[in-house]
Structures are given as structure tokens and as C-alpha cells.
Amino acid sequence: MPVEWWIRRDRNVSGPFSARQIEDLARDLELSEETELRLGRTTQWTPAGELKWLDEFFHVAEEVDPEPEPEEPVPVEGEVPQLAPTGYEDASVPEPIPVEAKAPRKRLSKSVVTLATWGLFALSLIAVVTVAVLVFSGDEETATSNEDGEEPADDDDDTNTAGTEDGVPGNVITEVTDGIRASQAIGLVASGWHGIDEDGDLFDRQTMFLLYDEDDIGSLSPDVLENLLPVSSPRGRFYVEAVLGGTGTCFLISPDGVAITNKHVIDDFARVQRSSGKRAKIEREHNLEDLDPRLWVFLNGQPHEARVVHESSSFDMAILKIDGISNSPYFRLHSGSDLPRGTKVWAMGFPGASRGAISEEEDFDAYRRLLSPNIDLWFKDSDFAYSLTDGSVSVVSDRTGFGTAIQHTADVNPGNSGGPLMMENGCVVGINTAHFKSASGMMLSLSMSDLNIRQEIKGVKQNLIWDDKP
Image (cartoon, rainbow, N blue to C red; front, side, top):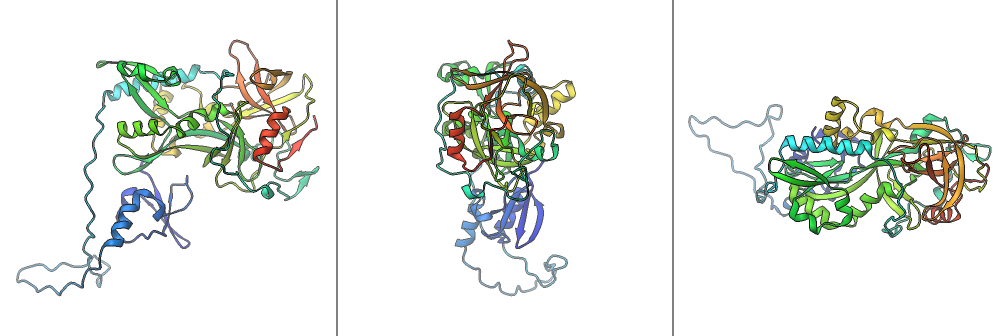
């Protein structure tokens, strides 16, 4: 499906246009650097002059001297005069502006996989995802918090005063069964890639693949080796690394788009974002340009770009800032230490987006979506339907390398990671973190009652709604 661009001049919006049509408009001086463009419905309006892939057209347009008025051609007997386009009888046909020819781009040199092999790999990858479970590891990589030094939002914008209920701001969720507002406050987190392909078209893709042969294995890091998928082909045995493409859950804790998730949900994205070498390798092998890792959060099925503003070095927790969010429903957080055994709790998340296929048709559909260059095709509508499971608290205890853990029986599956564990009044008591396969019905959530957790959250975002009632 081609990438669709839209143009906005003043308040008039036109489109859709392909990337090549946008280039033609820029080349013909029908776009200025101030003209606003938007990619589908996934991005905000951006001035054309800020898009790197259009620089050359504006640059050429600035340097070209105005052509002198052409002389009136002398008719030649028998020659058919050229006419202006129909409907523009008085228009003249301008000469094309000379553009410096670009050197032909090199095609992918390392093409060792046939389409059938890629299909085999995709099915194998889906099978691996099907049997994956979330197992907590205390050896999380230490990361720097708030790496860009940016605050997610001004503190005085935190509180929504549009009506209150029992002293709680009107946009705060007060019932676990409030599905309409919950769908706007719980997000499906997805990492992926944004770039320009060899045809010059922009794309958003969930996963990019890197290929390695036997000679490459010795130079790879343990993290990469752990995630390699061996594939056999008529040309021999090789190994495939799927870079990014994971999913998880997050939940809003403020009306302006600040959200909490697990650190392991965004770990791969953060690691790739810090590694320019891996991006350069993918660009070379796949003949791409301006490749950039991206993080998206789907709220009520609509994609929003997001950034990581905090990675905990002590807990499996990260904090995101989601773009384009204001006055949204959000969750309040539990600050009380009293959570007795038997307390009724609910777990919320998006396990459907990460489960494996259950039929051959879903196998093919999942493969097609995995390689789709359009973010609107990454997921099925059913993937955006969050799950809500109930259970009760078994015990709350301190665990070395984890923090204060809530062990409970509300079912948590892959894809639920980073979602909220709530009481009946919608107050979040924990972050869904782990499901131990070896212990049936044993789910762990990171408790909000941990003082250090609360201090980390307050260090990033002030004036949140905290509730100490059980």
C-alpha cells in the first residue's frame, strides 16, 4: 500500500499524494518550505522545509536564476503548434528546472534468501513468539534516566479540574469497568522503524532483519546471539536477527500523555536508539536512508509517537511521554501500604497483539503485517481490544532485585507487560510485570507502594493523583 501524504495550505487540506508526487510538486515550485505536510494520520503537520528528503528540491529552487522571457516562436510551415493544457488556454508550459542527477543507488548485494526462505523464517518467528512468556530477570541493563534531559510536561498542567467526583478530578478513571475512558488511557506500545526505501518512499515497519553466516557468529554480542533464529536454505545455514517489533502495554498517569510501562517493553528500542552502528548496518544491507527507530503508542486504536523520558536503573519500570495528548482520561496511583490478602484486583493489557497465529490464514496474515511498510496495517482491529482479567492478591512481599512484589491470580500473558493492576475503583496498585510458567497461576506486579518507585515517578512528573485508600 503506497505511503499517503497530505498537504495543508492555510486551512485547506488536499491529498492524498505519494512521496514521488510530493517531490514533483517541490520540483515544480508548487511547494514552499513553509507548506505543511502530514504522513497519513500517524504524524503531526510538519513544514516541508524540515523534511530532509525534500532538501535538494528547495536547494535547487533557490539557486536557479530566473529564465528570461522566451521569444515568440516563428511558425514553421507544416509544424503543429504546441498548445497549453486543456482548461488553461492562456497558460504557458514552463521549462523543467534542471536538477542535479543522482547517482544510481546500489542494489542489495547480500541477497541470500529467496521468498520461500523468508516465508519459512516468518512462520518460525511467529512460532517462537507463540511459546514466549514473560520471565522476569534481575539482571536488567543499567540505563541513564531522562537521557535527553527533557521534562515530559509542565507541572502546572497536571490537574484536570473539569468536574470532580469525591474530590477526584473528572478525567480520572474511578471504575475498573469504565471501558470507554479506559480505552483512551491504556495504550498498546509498539517499537519499529521509520525511513526511506530504495524507491524514495517513506515507510514505517515493525521489524528489520539482519543476516549472519557462520563466520559472523564469533563477533556478535551475547545479547544478539541469544535472539538469533537459525534458518537452513539450499545455500547453507545462516542466522536471522529480528531488530525491534516487540509490543507491550502502558497506562496514562496524567492528562497530557505521561505513561508508565515496564522497562523490558522498551529495552530493545532504547538499546537500538543508542547504537548508530546497527542502524548503519541495516541501511547498508537493505539499501535504505534516514533509518530511525521509533516508538508508538496506540490509544483507542490511534497511533501516537512516543519517547522514553525515564528508565529505572533499579526496577522494571520506564516512563513515556506520548505526543499529541491533552485532557485525556488517566489513572490515579495507589500510595497506601495496606493491600490485604484476598483483595480483588484486575489486570488490563493487550495480549492479543503478541499472541501467535491459530490458523494457516492467520499465519499468512501475520507474515504480511510483519513486513508491511504502513503502520495502519500492522495490527488487526481485534488487537486493540484490551483484555481485563480478575483475581485476588495472594501476598505482598519484598523481593531482591525486583522491589515490592504483588503476587496475585489475575491472569497476565505476553503483551500485558507494563499494564496496570487495579482495584475495583480503578486505582492502580501495581505494574503487570511477570508470569512464571513454572508456577501455575503465579503472576507478579511491581507495587506502587514501594517508596523508591514513588520517588522515581515523582522525580519525573509532579502533581499526579495518589490515593492511599485500600
